[in-house]
Amino acid sequence: MINKNLNPKALSPDCEIGSIRAGFGDGLAECDCFCVSADLAGSLKLNKFKEKYPDRFYEVGISEQNMILFAAGLASSGKPVFTASFAAFSPARNWELIRTSVCYNDVPVKIVGGHAGLVTGEDGATHQMLEDIAIMRVLPNMVVEVPCDYYEAVKATKEISLNGQPSYLRLIRPKTKNITTAETEYCFGRADVFYESKDPQVLIIACGHMVEKALQAADKLEKQGIGSVVLNNHTIKPMDEETIVKYAQKCQRVVCCEDHQVAGGMGSAVAEILSEKHPCPIKFVGVKDSYGESASADELVKKHQLGSDDIVEAVLTKN
Amino acid sequence: MNNLAKEIRRDIVEMCFQAKSGHIGGPLGSVEIYLALYFHALKEGDKVVVSNGHYSALLYSVLSKKGLIDPVELKTFRKLNGLQGHPKKDVSRGIETSSGPVGEGLGQAIGMAEVINGQVFCLMGDGEQGEGSVWEACLLASKLDSSVVAIIDRNSCQIEGSTKDVLPLDSLKKKYQSFNWKVWQVDGHNIKKLVKVIKLAKKHQGPACIIANTVMGKGVSFMEKDYRWHGQIPSLEQYQQAIKELS
Image 1 (cartoon, one colour):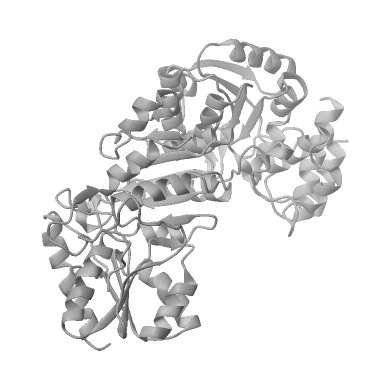
Image 2 (image 1 turned 90 degrees about the vertical axis):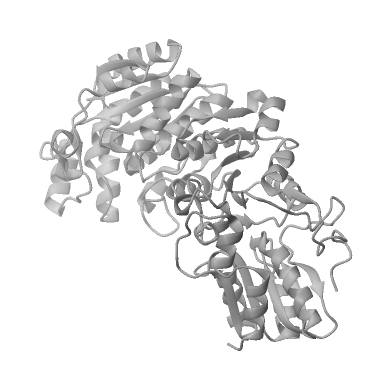
């Protein structure tokens, strides 16, 4: 059954739609911090913060390396500093600077990577960042958070602004269903059970917009008599080992779902845990070592087999 | 050359020889710049960002003279649990940021200048000017009318040869000026002139750059002007010769 603390309409076609990046923007406007933009304030929804706190907002132009360095310098104030750009530019382009001047320095700079995943759509491969979870989770001192909807993005933003350390927040371009509500409890570092059948046969672990697709898949599977558990695995690092192991033991079979390369992504991190703590068959629904291309988000999800039907298929076919 | 300068130069040679690795040539050329800053120009609350982190031996020696690092620790240079080969951020000891990959200090210095009351200095190398991130920072410094003061150790050397041969920079002065920075050029081994120019740079409204002309390997006859002493460790005989010249 679906978690009763979610939006009761989460599985319904007329579920309200929200913007994950607006969630970040709204959360940011309530934070006591600095914000540095690299010419993408509009897309990354920074204008609310900019209007509210003009003295704490900096626009550095198309200079993603300097955005990070400047932010690291601002952090010597003791205040957290958010930097925001498309994930394909930050953290991709400025990764070494994040490694050295943010993570090795261990300063509270929060890197926000927008337009992540295939669902970026029409802009095409250069703008569809599929490797950001991989390159950020490997950095010591870094935490990685992937909110599943608008409300979770608001809470995640406020939470990471207070954690005093380097952080990465992954956002996407299109709107998504608000599967949670303002009242849904949010806990950084905890994998949340969003769906649980009485006798689950498979554990579906998803993050970001794939959580909603996982819920749809769970619903379809239920109707076929196959029970499942769906985890909203929003904190990629530090990952909630305890919950993942607990439900892997219960279900004995796992399917990981992300809009990201299979290599090095959330599923890889799950595999690292389970191969040590509870080896069991794992399948990966994700991008299989390819770039994206220009198309609508829906077309790309279909082409790269990231839809709810593909998750069902992954569950039904043996390893 | 004054005695303190000789002591610091001996420290640099000693630390690297003991560690059997490290960078000697560049640091030897920047001793007067560090003396001018740390023993004359710096005030309480000022910050120094060392962007060319391979000058670590020089930084540690100076910080030990200022009482921020125990001189005994200099022997631990590049050793396990000791002073890091390239600086690791430790603000309580005067190490404002980690550095090593070059090109990362200026952007951070400009960020610090926005939030602290004191003066922020950024020390860079000239080979380092090849990094695009330096120029991104230069653009922003102009936009913000930043109070940052950059000091470039212009020894005209980098790892693979003279800067002229590897990646020509001239005119470095005109480049910074075109980015709307105020630029001074000065003899990098004349402490009096350095102090004077630093004072002027601090007073200037907007970003300022001091191009300090230096001799790589200064103080050790067989190292002077030789780019090959970037990361080379002297033999025992060379080490002994160097220490003799610096005594």
